[in-house]
Length: 564
Ligand code: ADA
Image 1 (cartoon, rainbow, N blue to C red):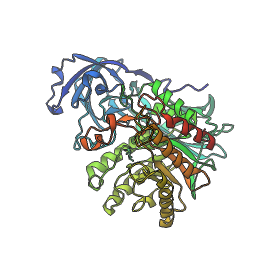
Image 2: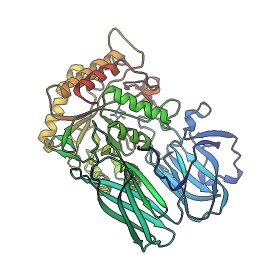
Image 3: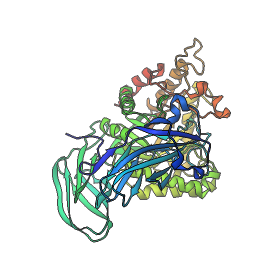
Image 4: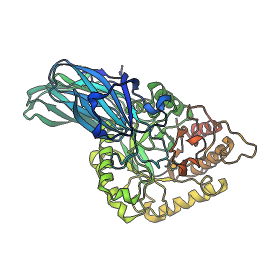
């Protein structure tokens, strides 16, 4: 029996989810805030987005959240924030312990020698769009930047010796071999310590390790004999439990290997075609702070649609969503935060550094998820400029150094003049024929032209994914003329796309339709005038996940094609 969503059994942990004290401070300088003078007149849910609640809708500024903790002893403790939007400062017992830039990624706040007893935790959360403070979230992006403590928060007692990180990579799926890398930390060198690893409760390693340093890494190659492989059709998971001294770390792993071979993507040496959608983590009532029920319901709908693939456009997916994808056998393109970054951003060390940190955090939080087969970055950024290339090289290099076991891609909207496609394993193209340019009958010729150009440009031996394509349909808008914005037009366009890509053609390794659900967009006039209701309406379901006409069409195609 595999228990879910719990990384530790022995480590003392408290989920800090619930209702916290709250005060909205507005457009103030964070350095001028006297935390002791705050009165917290309101209450706010954690996880939650404060500006997805009626009282703070549309507000931008600084907000203060407060709760309290009890330290039972003075050994190191840690607060783990799964995501705060989109800049924050964490204070424990009145002391500033850390600032963090960017939503959608996990970070920890260490309390090394706490005073035993009850202590106040204050999180100053800023949702203003300020490039200097947070270059990862900018006002022109085609999604709304909500603010708040948007994913779960945990309080952990680490004790004197703890496992700091654990990475498990399949090195040879044929003989079920995995490489385990465990980082440990301690208050002082722990000396001889027991290390035990079990797989589905069977001991696969048991030894005494001599920890002569306060921090270090232990690497072991393990053969998990008798275990079954993970694949989209048979997503078999195994529970790996690692115990070091009195601490533990548990991961559900899938034994599988991903590679690109010519135009194909292979899982365990079997070719797989990706039938999928792009998905934002968004809901009118929760913003990006999706409750478990929505996460589970989204995965149900992806399965119902016949998808075997989802792209986490345009930021790292919630680890709880990835857990569900691991179980459902849905392959994931997990993407670092980015949206149409310009040459100016890509040549600015301030931006590139923040983007690299975001990548490091994304990889750390999802490295053990078998569903993740692709790392993505820099959606539709300016890869046509020679000056942008060093940033692509640095960031892609960073991903490869952290995880050579997965494929790397980025969604390009420059199929004819991209200068960085040689850096990736999979070529991915976003294009909107029949919507932003041309008519439905132009779709086939346009896609053929892209594929032919890429093949001639030297990428004939790389898999090709259409990573975005779609049409806006205002929910419920049906029209005799089947004009743009009607649900019928979306049906006609997606029908033409899917028939063109997959019927009698083998060039395409996958498709991610733009998009799964409608979502609130940027409120800049330049954007909103092309976004009826203030929403990007290209969803197969609306923002409340109610299916549009195109849902059934895609479902029929994907199921016939064999998505799931
Ligand atoms: C781009 C972008 C998406 C979305 C889409 C659209 O391709 O990557 O985030 O904005 O266009 O709907 O126009």
